Each structure stands twice: as C-alpha cells, then as structure tokens.
Image (cartoon, rainbow, N blue to C red):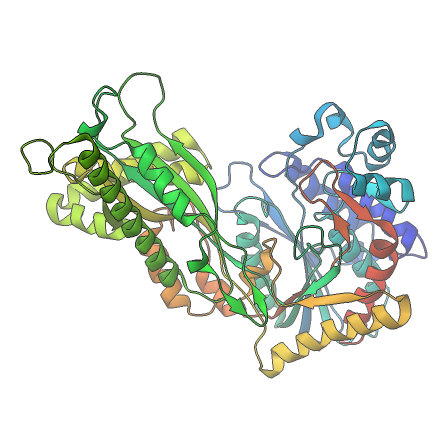
Length: 547
C-alpha cells in the first residue's frame, strides 16, 4: 500500500489486479471468494482492525451458495449522520467467449500480453498497441469501480475531519437477478437504524456505455433505465404435419408475436432528451423435447423491455395489444390460405380459430372460479417441485408455471398467455427537488473539474442503459408496481424476493461516476488505465470531500 492508502495510481492498479484475480463469475462459488477478499482487504486498513464492527455482511435469502452483500462504514464523527453510499458489484459474467485464452481471463497482464499475437478488431488492436489499456474479464465491469471505492475508503479512513459518513456497499449477483442488492438494501436499512444515519447520496461507479454504435464518449449518469422481462406463453392446438390446417402451431404463434414485438416503437419513450432502447427478444423456443411429426403445442418468448417512465401496468397493456394484433394477423393469414385453397370457413370443413389473449392473472382467476382451491393448491405444489428441478433459472421456471396453468385450459386453445418473469428493475431519475438537485450538482462539479484539471470532456446522461443496482435506491408508485407484480409475476414472493417496501423507504438519489472502458461482456473487455486510475479517483475524491 502506498502512502498509507491505495488511492494512488499505483495503489489502485495493484488493488484492481488483486480483485480481478478472483474469478467471481456470477452464480458460482467464486463470488464467495470475492466476498472474503473484500473483507480481507478492508481488514488490512488500521481503521477496520480497530473497528471490525464497522464491517457488515448480509446473506441473500434462500440462496444455495450463501452469498452475501458486503458493506463497511466510515464514521465521520460521533455526531455525524449525513451519509454518502459508494455502490459497486463484485460478480462478473462468464469467460466462455475467451476461447483458448480462457485460463488467462483473470490475469490481466498476461492476457493483455497474449492478445498481441491474436486477431483483434481494429479498435481493440489500436488500444492494445497504445499501451494505455489493460484487458481481462471484470477489469471494466466493474472491478475498476470497486477498486476506486476501496481506495477512496482507504484514504478517508486516515482522516479525522470529514464531517459526515461513508458506507461502501459491494454486492454479488448483479449480472443475473440482483439478489445481492436485495440483501444490500436490507443491510443499508440495518446500518441506518443502528447508527442513526441519513442517506443523502449514492455514487455508483459502473463504466460508461456508448450511446450509439461506435460511440467512444465518456459519460456520467444521473439515473438508470428500468427493466421488465415479459414472458409470452403460446398454447397451440396439436395436429399431424400432414394436416397442418387441423391445428395451430405454437411455434408459429410465438414467431408472429416476436416479429411484432421486436423493436416495437409502441414502447419507445422520450424523457429529459433521451430515448430508451427498443424491445428485443432474449429467448424464443418451442417446448418439444424430441422429434415426431406432431406440431408443437407449447412455445414461449422472453422479451426485454427497458423503461424510462412508463409503468408496469402500461407495459402489460401494450403487450396485450400486441397479442391481439398477432391474433388478428393469424386469423387473416388462415382466412387467405383457406380462400386460396378453395376451402370453406363455414363450420362444415374447419372453422378458423384465432388465438385468444390472456394475462396471467386473468387466466389464474378463471382457474379459481372453475376449479376452486384445488387449482391454487395444484399450482403451489407444481411450483415447489419445479423449484427443485429447475433451480434458479427463473425464466424456465416461469415458463413451466405457465405450462401448468395452461394445462387446465386446453379447451380454450389456442391462446397467448402474457406474464412477467424476474427480474424487475425500477427506472430511476433525478427530480427537481432540493435533494436531487444537490446530487445533480455533484455530477456537474465533477464534469467541470475533469475539464479544467485534466482536459477531459465528459457528457452527462439521465439514464444509464446498461442496467444497474442503482435502480433499487428508490421506487415511485410502489403500490401500483406491487399490484402488477403480485398479479402477473408468479414468482414474486415465491423465490424472487424483491423488497419493494425497503426500496421505497430508502429513496436516495443515485448517480454514476465511473471509469472508462470498452467492450463489457466481450473477450476484448478492457480498461483505460490513465483515466481510471488517475482522473476517476481525483473526481471521486472531489465528489466526497466537497459534498
């Protein structure tokens, strides 16, 4: 450690390499090793050896790996209650994309050296040859931010004159369902209650993302997009492939819906001069497990929708409209096919049947009315069994639940069943009130300092579009959000334990002041060392000391 702390260029780089060395791939035991490493690093500081009670862990509920969010508190003084939170996550995505260089993925110096002999995109080759970039999994997303936060804490711990407190929070599982942040919200509430803190600002240090293909600008953010993951389950009517008009292929139903939902501008929003990314399909599959000549009777789509301000209720309404539009198209396509083949749609040959459209709650209520408590009990029993069989793959689990519910309504087939799969991310943005405008001022001040002291131009955007745990620092319209999740997300409270009440009570403005890198989640993931180890630490120090 340099100068008694890590908050120097050399110290941060050393810290970063130590963090990256731990292969904390999300959903693996590597996250447990990362948790231990963070605590070990903190315990190297005299402040935490003197105050080990200021280090906290909070376990994720019902987690098979027993992963934990890690937090530490720096007390500015006995009377201080104003508090800034430093937020980061310590998990990373997998390394399958590294190919034969996979063994070097968590050894940035060796991996960067090895890339000199590899074929690379021109942009990555240019950065490699500059000598200013270092490559490796997690080096950008987001262990550079975590290293900067630990380094800042290590410096602050040597001060006795800071008139407020800092809480560092590092979470696992951010790259999947953000269950680590659900534990993090809990530990923040416990620390606040124990020490009488007032949380005024959260600073996250996710790296900046390009606003368009090829964009290499640097960005800070004053909010983050929300996310919904609708699952559209398609129940068709079976038939032999020799008689395709005697049924309705569920795979066709799914493809028709996916075509209309993909990049659909009905979900497009504009807010504060920015637009949300358009929807895209994350999964499209039928449910046939083996080959035969019967058409698929089940299929589903997982659709990624990012939001700026539209509510879950509004999104569900638009999804149902797309289902109705898809049904009309299928009916018209069948009518034209019948007509071209000279068939009659008169009930004596085969009556054209368009798919019906239901939300999960509509069909669930129908099941309760027709089958009573036996229906609810059967669903609950299936959920318990499915949890054991499918583990934590919540998309597959949601689809399996949809299949169970749909099996009670074969007489209604064909139909679309529209529901929600975890995760759910609230959108967050700054408002015009005094608390939020002070947070905005912190970002503006950092941008000015970067320009004046480092000749760096940094742009400010209202929404981080890469998804972030800052989504869980506030929740507007909690009751309306909860109502939709309770009705349309069968795993809500049944394995997906998003703490809406705690999130709403937290209500802290969150901004993102982070490092500069490129190609997150790619084999060419890399970090710009001069900005991330010299400029960023100076800006974070400025943000905290001048608050």
